[in-house]
Length: 117
Image (cartoon, rainbow, N blue to C red; front, side):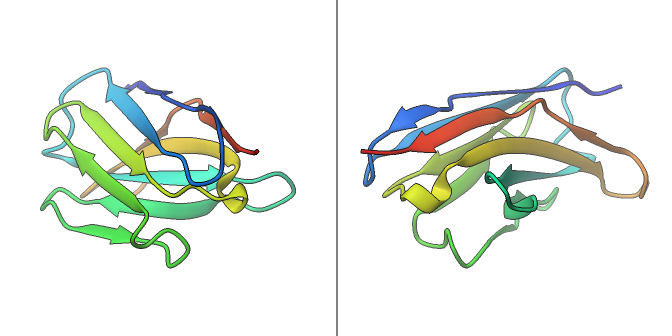
């Protein structure tokens, strides 16, 4: 059982920055594709950015050029969020999905991000 713990959320003004972290209970980057999701109030959960075991990254169109996903290749996944907008307000979740076992995935508890003047 892999445990994921997110941190780094908070209240920030539009145009500001935050850095989210997701720490796993064990070294997982060699076997798990990692991703950040978010769920805004009244909306469905959406994929924000992903980081696969080969180090390839991808982003939702809404965050391209503003968010950067990265990892330490061991236990910690990051999401650097710059030029934040009100629409980025959401609970952000970290997910780990085993690259070869389809039903083996883990989620963190989420961290709240509020972008407001």
